[in-house]
Length: 108
Length: 114
Image (cartoon, rainbow over all chains, first blue to last red):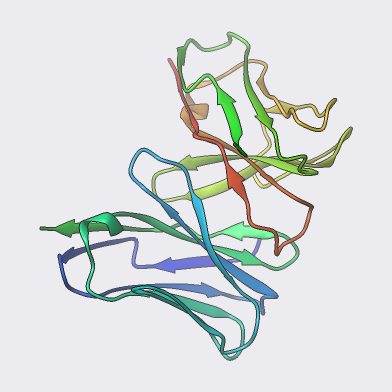
């Protein structure tokens, strides 16, 4: 299958700090999805990016699709305790393949 | 309420004892799939189904079976479970088999094989 690298694997931040996770593909993608999984929960769809260079925002979350459509990032501004969880990217190529996830923990 | 329902939520069993994890969705979705989630490995697809009576292997199908006799149901069968199948399992569904369709996940089934 295709290479799906998501970094970092873990991130611990102080509440109020920013957080970014990156998703990289070895191949050009048709689309990318982002999911959030709360501790003990299941992945929940957040957003989908389709266009080269696309940027979408959801309140404090900013999602970006790279110009070459091979990478994407999720940035959270001023983290809150409700942001705790694991963030997965889903890479759309021949099918949807999930990244390994970034686990975000927040120190109050 | 639109949802994907998995049962059981938790199961502890022994090596070799056949088990079935059920999955049902009420959204009339065509596409259903099973994933396993292990620390550091993310979500890996086991099997998927594009429609009734159409199933195919995902990335890690060894030791698993599935069936899709009805549109709403997609059970995962472990004929002879082994300890390396201890994991957290998720069923997911989407409107169609397409890379741009959001996946709806069930609450998960935590399996422990002793």
